[in-house]
Image (cartoon, rainbow, N blue to C red):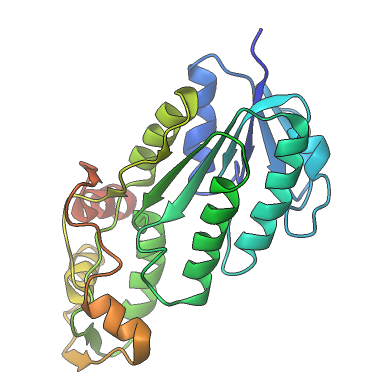
Length: 254
């Protein structure tokens, strides 16, 4: 009998796709959550908080594989260090992490915490796998909805995005989790590049709303230079998803 796979962030955007795929592969799944839940659909829920390092040891106890999906706008590095310490003590044999494309190039604080989390895992002594992915369609939609509410269509010069389908990233992560530790694997991105107006226009069309006048803007500072240079992209050597932004919108809004 195989031991459980611990999934952190198992109730989030990515986790909701990952957990049933792991179950379909015949694996027992344990989900770490900050809010207590009763077992359901064959899933064991354990309560804990990685950032506060509460319940971490109990969460990893008896698991041989950890899939670390939990993340936020701050503290990912510290939360990951807490997880690594507990996983090492518990004898975990494979630690899988989802990071972001450009973690080592984009000078934003929350992105750099992802890089520090990557380093904590790579230096842990635990066999590991890290996948960097582009922004999910779901998160892109949240951004687009905010931009679409403005009276003008912002057009940051040089900014390009390659949003990817969360379900496709989930399938890749499950494949990696069930496989052997592979270190840093090729990044995963969506099939098309978009500027911000290119993301907003199909959203407005599906909502039956009139086009907005375009307002060119310049992203300031080091982050602006990084985005204009395409440091948030992987244009060669990436795993490429199949589902486009337009297809995602048609399903979600149509």
